[in-house]
Image (cartoon, rainbow, N blue to C red; front, side, top):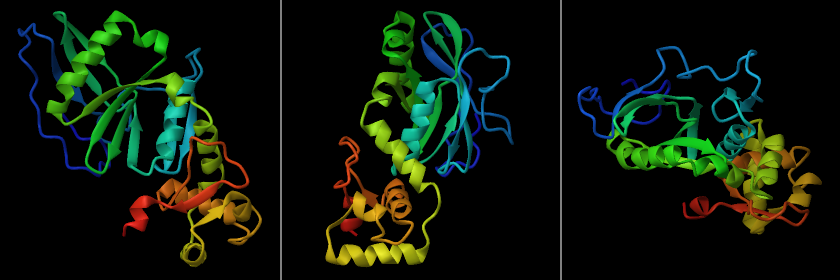
Length: 247
């Protein structure tokens, strides 16, 4: 098994292919893409009739390919989660046995956090109740921690929850470009005399002409926090994140 390209975590320990005569439900092998490749299989293809596309990720520094609106929503949310260091689409192939039969599974996303690797599979709720899907999910949730991964089945309906998704789109709209040290210092000085900055103040020049870009980018980075579960209004408050206030 190979570690993913450009991984920031310690490599996953080497593993062995299981005994082909072993008919127990088990994980046989996890295979990462060949050197120089990002994906274990192709996502965007002109020959496919399903909706596909590419997401310009500021976090990964490249165009991330998606093959359903739900996967696109995943990438938006991952780009806006400061706990996520990076992520990869269609990252691995998992060979496993279930009920005595060998299968190959391509999880949708590998999510890397500070001290954890998570493999995510994105499904609509109607698909998640399929008996085979439930059995596979239970198996991989139980076995993959031994291989250094957490396995998660993520529901498309949860990913599309509002107003969180709309707020994330706004953060990404304004916050894709880096913030200069001078702009960071301007915000730091403002927060010395006020506990927060309002959204309308950022839009109307309190931090200069790039006020919206500054607060949105620093929220994406985790320097500031915003309640994503509430609609973004003129009086919405951007505050120093709890991790920062504890420094």
